[in-house]
Amino acid sequence: MKRYNLLLWVLILTMSVSAQPPRLLITTDIGGDPDDQQSLVRLMVYTNEFDVEGIICSAAGTPGELKDAVVRPDLVEEIIRGYQTVYPNLLKHDKDFPAPEYLFSIVKRGNPLRGWENVCDGKDTEGSEWIIRQVDKKDKRPLNICIFGGQTDLAQALWNVKNSRSAKEFQQFISKIRVYDINDQDKIFTKLYAAFKLPFYVLAKAPEGVDKREGAYRGIYLGGDESLTSMTWLKENALENHGPLGKLYPTKTWTAPNPHGVMKEGDTPSWFFFLKNGLNIAERPELVGWGGRFLKNEAGVYRDATDTFEDKTEARATVYRWREDFQNDWAARMDWCVGDYQNCNHAPMVSVNGSTGKELLIIKANANETVELDASASTDPDGNSLHFEWLNYPETSNISGEMMAITGNGKASVKMSGLEKGKKLHMVLKVTDNEKPNLTAYKRIDLILK
Image (cartoon, rainbow, N blue to C red; front, side, top):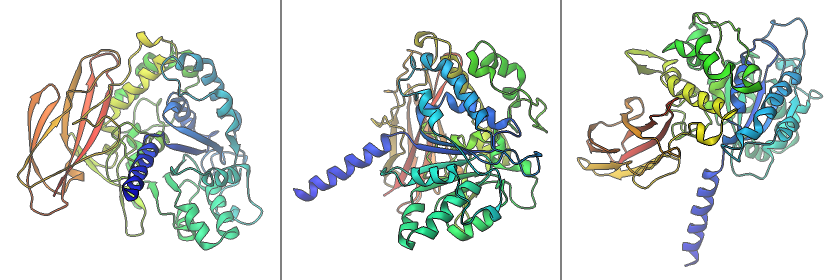
């Protein structure tokens, strides 16, 4: 009985942790290319989905972009003031939006100087010390760190801990961290990883020798349907008639070969990766989500993977294949800034075989067994009708299944094939409502051979 009670307690604790929002900390080089401001404007209407624990202003701009070495917390605070004006209306849609006063309190100054020579004794910053403080919290959830700009403040935090604590304590510290690094901007990744060997590190960057625009994260604005990044789309869905926050979205960036020259948001995929929406599962980078798909290399680092979408195979496809979904989702949230609940759209809530959470559903089955999938209990908070789309994801499956009899009303069946125990067929369910903008929710299912 005691053993049963212990197992039950562990199960309850695990479910409680998984139901909590992800922890999020950002370092941003805001103050150069305005795409950081774009990414932060979008993030403001998603702060209800995270426990945002820090916005660290690192050295502004890319190396060599600006004449002066500065950090720009004033630009972050300007965006939070825009959020403050729409905050009362956002609360009509979700009580979990954080108070603006709290967001102001977690804006910290990093090092205006970048590079490995600025990672050493005496180089601690308000930002690096804040990172240490957040990792040290008594919280069983990992701290997800998004590197919009440079890694110097993170590297300094790691250097401090490694040189002030025991080897065991340092390992415990880095085990709590998950990093998504956009493009190794400070050019210190090789030294950083060699020195600290973080166990979970996503380096979103095109491979050496390949055009930098081929990086997976650039699928936020390159490839696919680029009309969804145009000035026309942005004016209708964010810039105009959506309150003061939308007006803070910069409207000129360098996006070539995207012809529109407006939306870039090169850093948004980093926090997309940690967003719990039923599609993104951060602990499984090999499963594609809004932030891309990544495979671990021999060094233990997650690097860009490729997907095939609309007959094109490339890393950017792992992001842009979802662009219609994530742009519609953002448009609806910008509507929340000015509209009442009954006049705005909200995403469906998915249920598959009784599983209603956003976690991965695992179903074990025998070879040649037919598995019945039933999503008919899915609901829409606005009473809209729902469309169901079942996807077999070949890039993340290692057996085939005979897909599938679609019986309508959210029901389907899959006949398993394959012989080896533990092999899996990976499915994605998309549930989309019929309101404008159409909103999509997801459920991932692993069908595993017994």
